Image 1 (cartoon, one colour):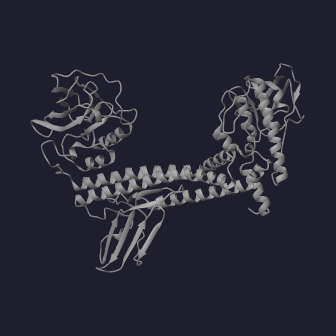
Image 2 (cartoon, helix red, strand yellow):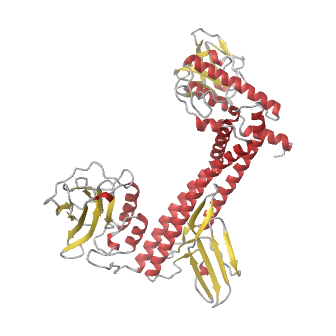
Image 3 (cartoon, one colour):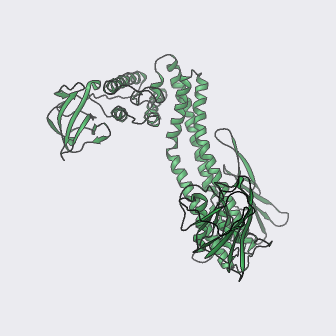
Length: 601
């Protein structure tokens, strides 16, 4: 097994290792307290000792040995004493990673029943690591803690046995590590770290593109709940803003954790390079002028800072501090690269570092950033700006709706926009009612007397038949959809849908209405789509929109009750379709804002 694959395997084992489907093997020898010895053969990946038969709270010793390896006799790979009370899931894992063809494990000094043994070959998959781990060989049998082992030890969280003293010794073998290989290993680790950080920041920034919508949902939900609880305007407003800030604080914590992780990883790579007598400029800043050359001296540290999050809590993290001094006792310029911003103190000596990383080790390799603090700072600023923007919107929401709510001019259902509806509701048993709500929110119109409509039987030009309710943004040229008539969607404005009991089907091309019936089975000759158009420019039209949509809500509710009976649930009570079918939300705020500013937005 290659060293690179071994490091990868150790990292994956931390995230996704579980031993399942194993069949316990019997020990070779045993007394009441052991020792029990078992031999694993075939270069297995993972060695498993199951202690579930041992007494609870008993201490025992486990030893792993191999014949040959780096020596001609017996090599002790690991020897540890455990207490069964402290083991995870009553199992010990030893990651041989194929390094040794055979490994003997001996369990002794225990009480109770005998331990059982098994192994798992290949890359393990499954759930989280929920077993106690003795350690890993790193995939090689030299017992030398080379750079690959050191990096793997730092990244995986699994103790590499090559980098710990062998039982009976106090030293770790680090001989035969080639400087060129060390530089290559450090560079490869930097590439992996760069890719991971880039992916994390890219995903986070992509999330932030849509985060304001989700933050508005959180804020408006909290505002509606506060109204339902009879809160004052200031209390309802604060509830909305706190929900928004709680939402963004989670993003900040994730960003801080990644920042601290990259700083710690850079520190480890730099210490590895210095320990191997590699030039300090190899693991350095992107600004090579900071190197200790000429009359300048350069230094950097990783202090800890406490930052206040959007929700008012504080979080500690590790940041980067870079300083440059001109001559002995001369002027010093220091940059503190906080995640919030870069603070400078001292003389201007030309520090322009944008990141910390590893420089190329050959002519065809280039600098790789490990800590791109400018990207972190930019993402942090985006989070703070979005939080403030949405908090301001919650102020506007409360100012424009609270008085009207208290006066009875609007109710809390009028505050639910498509985003809130989508976040709180699912189709449930009444798919047609839910679909009607969704399509109405999207501006698609339903038949008049919707509460009486039973079903349309529709056949498409491919011969597929559907039974459901027809929705359309506009009527055909005749002004009505008629029984026994064929239509072409290209001749009707907007999009046409038929909503069945379990899906929404978009019609395309020709389709024929075979029949239209009421809920009691009577045939209907024609149906008119109720078309409503609004220009939301003033409060009067907005109020009319509320009233019309309330009527639409009542029709959907009545049809649902007639067909299946009503059901409770949801944020505001009632069925999925009994919630508002409104387009206000942002539109209402926009309309009021336009009226107040004269439309100059």
